[in-house]
Amino acid sequence: MIEELLKLDTELFIYLNNLGNKSWDAFWLFYTTKFNWIPFYAVLAYLMYKRLNTKMFLLTLLVVALMITFTDQMTNVFKKVLVMRLRPCHNGDIDGMFRLVKEYCGGQYGYFSGHSSNSMAVAVFTSLMLRSKYKYISFIMIPWAIAMGYSRIYIGVHYPLDVISGMLFGAVSGFVFYKLDKYLQSRFQLIT
Image 1 (cartoon, rainbow, N blue to C red):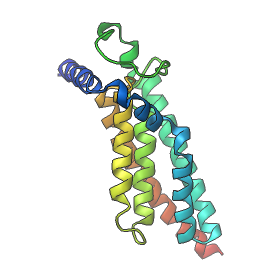
Image 2: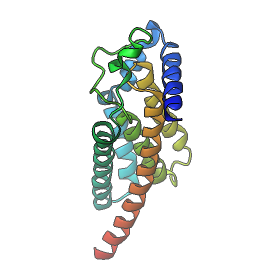
Image 3: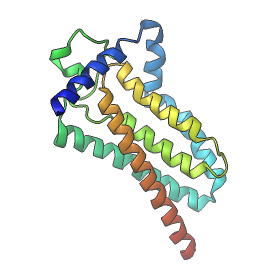
Image 4: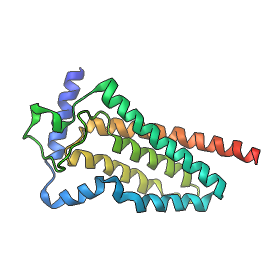
């Protein structure tokens, strides 16, 4: 059963990856680079700052930093300890069958995608945090995170199952850390 699932995952990866072409490569390389999203994150932080007072905003930033650290480190645990599934670019069985757009494809193992888990955690957390003031924000954040996951398939560094698993883990993490943030804010307001 698992062998068949991995075979289908590999076939879907090859199909989706080969849909790409050189005219879109620069766009997806830009999209998948975390550094390029700093202005976007700054806007999200500003929107949260406007919604919260300074103390609560700093508390929320701490929770977001913990959330990103958690999703990032759990990704490493799954990749390097629990699953150890080779990335497509390190899988000699499919050499030459897909497009590797990025010169460096990352570490040896790829299950599950850190980009996918981190971006979906941010998308879910932010959507929940800002939905009372910006009711359509999830219609921006969730597609943004899905496209981040797709970018990893496009450039040739993750299988679809890596991306979907990362997004699911990120969504749950984003929800749990949102609840933690709400709890800490209520406790902190009682103290001050």
